Structure formats: structure tokens, C-alpha cells
Length: 417
Image 1: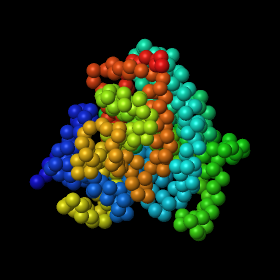
Image 2 (image 1 turned 135 degrees about the vertical axis):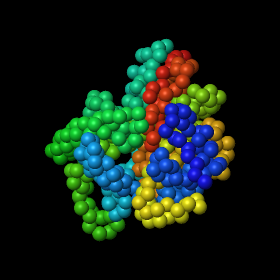
Image 3 (image 1 turned 120 degrees about the vertical axis):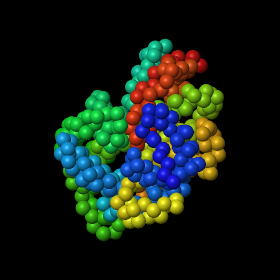
Image 4 (image 1 turned 180 degrees about the horizontal axis):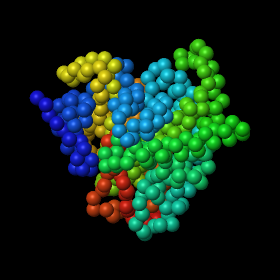
């Protein structure tokens, strides 16, 4: 029996939880005619899709081939060429080689050395926001967006003064990568942003070659390929095209998703004031709170894979070449894995969420995102009080892959003690 769950309606965009619950109860693995893809919702099978090498992440070329006709075909081909160089869209051994360059600097211990810089940036953003106490502000524009953007700019050695332009480019590229459903000109906007950001990064690379410094970009330029993809055989240095692709990925993945983490976390606290009060009283709960925000309303809701061969999954047969949507958001509401899955609980003890993925493609920037989330809420709850949501209804963005708001209007007061 075919059952169609429509994830593209405005109701589903605003609140996908009822559809997730229905999927989990009736057809956790099913084919969606409207998406022309398989959909996987339950925790165990989502985790399997993330880890099984029979599922490929290399989806850009098939997508470009599928869209080979039409007015936007050349733009899609160029977008697919550059973004297809991202390691998140590469299978081994190409993925292994690219990830090796970043494995050491992104280890938790290394990332922890950046906590002081994150604290400083969070303080600076909070200083700017404090000037608008008592006014209605868009929390995303005032805090959740600039904090991770400035952190990423600092990490890759780019002047934070141009963060606004960088985030604008990132937002337009996101319309393509995250399949914005209500943006008819998404291909043109993403292509224009790509052309401009490519030119910008090539100039930055040239400057770093002339004057190396202690940042991530200089490390990528200096990488000589020693160790190879398997850690033993000689490898090859990164090309400028590969460096440009990875720089765009840094900005995109490190900014867009962390903005959503901070924003969605604030929404969770606004809707559960007892949890906000508990967290404000005990900052030792911050690490667990961030993990709960990642589970409850994670910044990435869906990951896409392509079946390399015929695969049996959940009583269904997925044919080689077919696309699979693994719904992280639905898996996090799976009651067989999470007790009271529909509740926000910052003290949740068992929380093996998949918000950062799992396996060889697990988000390499997860340690930094956790630090940013922790320090964001530490400064917010230390310096501000009486957060009040102004909007009567939240409007979630039409992105299919991510979970983020168009805006979050609220008022707040400065803490006096």
C-alpha cells in the first residue's frame, strides 16, 4: 500500500512533527512519488543509510545530468562542478584525502583552543545587541547570524568587516544546496553568488600565498600531500580549485547550520521557559542543552544519499541509482530511541542524536559548533533577561534540507544582577 506524506506544504514546513510521527507509526521506509525518492524516517534505518558504503554522497553530477535541459542548465552545471568538490559530496578515496587535511586541526582538543576567541566574539556581538534592549530585534540578524560568521571568518583568516557580504553569498548558495522550494530564481541567485565568492577567495588565496599566517587557509595551501589518502602512501597537494571549494564549504557549513542551532535553541527555550530558567541557574547544563537543541530541532533535517546497488531496507527494495532522503528530524522523534521524544529536556541523559551525521561523513566541524552553541547561550543568559517572542506565528524557511527561521523577532532586557 502506497502512502504519501507531503513534506512540502506550508503546514509541514512550519511543524513537521505530526508527519514525522505518522511516518514512524505507519511507513518509516517508503517511496515518495512527489519527491521521486525514497524516504527513511526511523532511527535505526537512518543511521544505516548514513554509515552503509552502499549509499553514495556523490549526488551533484547525477543532479546536473538530470537538469541537463532548460534555461538554467549551464548554471546548474557550474554550481555542481564547484560544490561537487566539497568533501561532503565525495566518497572515498577522494573524501578521505580531503578530510585528512582537516582532521588534525578540527579535533576536539584543537578546537578547544579556540574557545577563548569564541567567547570574545560572543561578547562583542552581545555588546552590540545590548544597545537595543527594550526594542524589538530580529534575534537572527542581531546575534545568531553574526556570531558564527565572525568565528568562521577568523578561522580562515578573512577580515570580519566583510562578514555581511560573505553571509549574503552563503545565503544565496544555500537556496540551491538546501532545495529552497519557494524561491523560483534560486539557480540564478546561487550561480551569481558562486561567481563572486570564487573570485573573492582566489584573491584571498593569492594574498595568503604571498604572506602565510596561522589560520586554516594557510594550512590548506601549505599541505604537501604527505601521508596520502591512506596515511602511508604519498598523496598530492590541494589544487586551488579544491581550496576554493573547501573555503566555500567552511563558510557555508560553519555559518548557516550554527546560526540555525542558536536560533532553534532560543525558540526551544522561549517555548519552554522552565528549561530556560533551569539553564540560567546552572551553566553546567550547557553541554547537555546544546545536544538537546541539536536533537529536538536540529539545524539539518535531511541528508541525501544515492543507492550504489539494489538494497533491502525496512522491507522495501531500493534500486541502484535511486535517491534516498534520510530524515534526521524524524529519527530524533523515534520513541523507541528517545524517551518522551517530543519534549525538550536539557537534562536528557541518553541522547545519541544524528544531527552531525554519523560515520566517515560525520560533520568535521561538530566540536566547534558545540563550543559556539555553549558560549552563545552562556553570554545570552548571563547578560539578558525577559526574552519575549513578538511574532504570533513563526515562519520557517522553505529549505527542505535544513531547519531555520526567516526571522525571530523578540524583545529583551539587560540583566541587573
